[in-house]
Image (cartoon, helix red, strand yellow):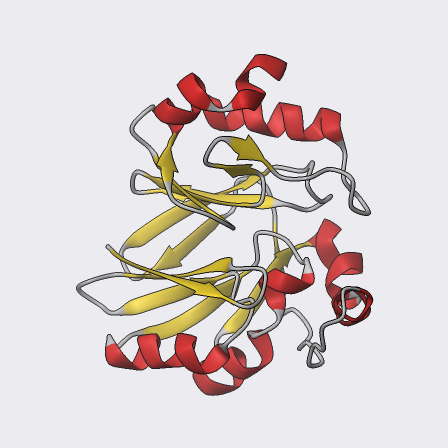
Length: 207
């Protein structure tokens, strides 16, 4: 499995390019900004991007989708409960003082239990609300891409529109049920493991 992590944009969001080493088919998770850098990594590694997935639709995670879709022809997927946030991302960005291009319409929606594929790689969709209503994690092959549900040592904020502290507690607890050696790739900050977060995450004492 190929995993390329790019820290993009002023909020230092993690975009991931995940590909099958044999087929070179790939998906992009959370292309938030700096589309030229993302496209360069796709081309440099000879990857064929079929799918763009958003763990959630806050503006810092979605800003580069138009250019990536135009370059690759990939289809765009979000959870249906993120539709309102996705449609309002441009206004949300403006509130924070940033300019966002118009976003393409999603090509489809991901639901709990769906399977996402890139070549021979398979990932399951976990609906993990709390940071936002339609937050999802993408789990498989010993890794989980968690967006802003869980970070190294902390969890996502719940004071934004659609956030819910009780739901993020449930989502956090669910993620801790994954195997300890599962690598965690989150929306901001360094990677970690489920086992480390069980031991060291301050939020573990809250659930």
